[in-house]
Length: 417
Ligand code: PLP
Image (cartoon, rainbow, N blue to C red; front, side, top):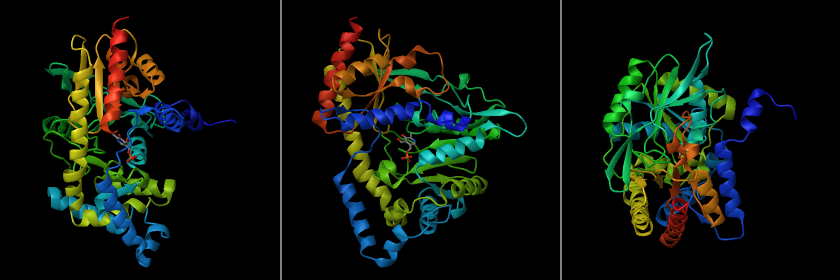
């Protein structure tokens, strides 16, 4: 088969593909595997019940059922949902926006693909621009989303040691050089994989920098405010006409609905709508219709704050407790302060083996984590990249504890080599 440059780039081994493959294969094996690898949201029964009730109401109503399965939405997304999301954000935060500031995508992953390639890559004037990540580690799903090479540039963060065995990344503004080759800034908040949450001050400074250089600031709020609000520190959502805020229904518990929500100025929304039409004709209606009522009556905030966030916060606390119980105090291990999302990010300073080797050894022991080196798009040479692993803490407590006990054992062995 002869492939184009596009065909070759998108079929060559990518980090996200190998990760998803590994997770899928591990789940399909007969032996019991302790899954601490993926980013699948947990199945929270009370939340699933809310979705089930809403779905049943749709099924029981012929008009709504037809809307769910038998209608193409406009390329901007389901009209009523788009309208209600705009009204909701206005009510919640007083942001000056209307339905012309909202577009839906088939998952926020597809939204990032479109946005990144709108603002970076080759330009008609012969220039080449990149997406700049103010901090790496950053979300693995960005890594291969560029249509051209040399697509990302990232800055090493500052590392604050805030307690014994605990650290936090901060944007190192001294390192952050923005020039003509920067097409947009992008950061996930909370960050997948580290669980870091950029402070309000960091976001404001990034916003000022972006405006000064006349480039957009893309904030990936997949785990953020206002839903599912997996944020365990104080952090305010920020948006203005130069910010592109990307939300999703996935981490609320609807990953299969593939519903991403982009909030941006009208020009960006128009462009996304056009790309949506070409790539998909229309985005999926399923998520819009299931979540419509809870956005309209604001209950999406209550569901997030009273059911979803406490669930993950308890899991995070439990996982940290297990780490302290099983890890050897004398070893130079550090966990990133779990400020948000559903992961623990472990930094094993001066580990004699690479994080990939540790991952392989853990897989042999039937524990699946993700090697940290995948999460540094745009950073080539840094030992830290090979000293970290990401662990998902969403499984039941017994499984998480078993997994952490094995992880601690393998880490102890590795340091002893
Ligand atoms: N952004 C971050 C930080 C994520 O972790 C994910 C998924 O894991 C996504 C975006 C994409 O989510 P979706 O395409 O399901 O909306």
